[in-house]
Length: 168
Image (cartoon, rainbow, N blue to C red; front, side, top):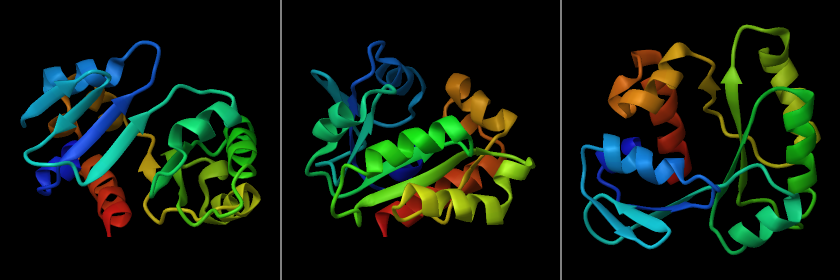
């Protein structure tokens, strides 16, 4: 959200998690205008051009109902058997998958994070895969406490690359 607002976008954020941490995080750490409207927040100035939803891990059919009709659905997935199986179950519910994007999250130096392994796992999931990945870095954890500005340069670069990719 921060990267998109910093790029001049206005973003509508829906927090569907049982403990709405995203809303609290945005209102405490954001350095931009925020307007709360029920279970949603509009970050940035003007009418929102994008919507971001935060959802807890859930049954695939329930998640599909929440995002039905969205232009783009990002599926954060760690390169692990459990996450990949969950992503496969969600993606299998869609006939047209062009709006889905698998985003590799918590990518590190392990064998599961090697490019050839990610390509194989991505093919198993069966939807387009974002080129940008989110690394497993201490900087990402710092963002929970300090916001986007708390990220180290490598983490900021990864987040900005993903933001540019999904908005172009």
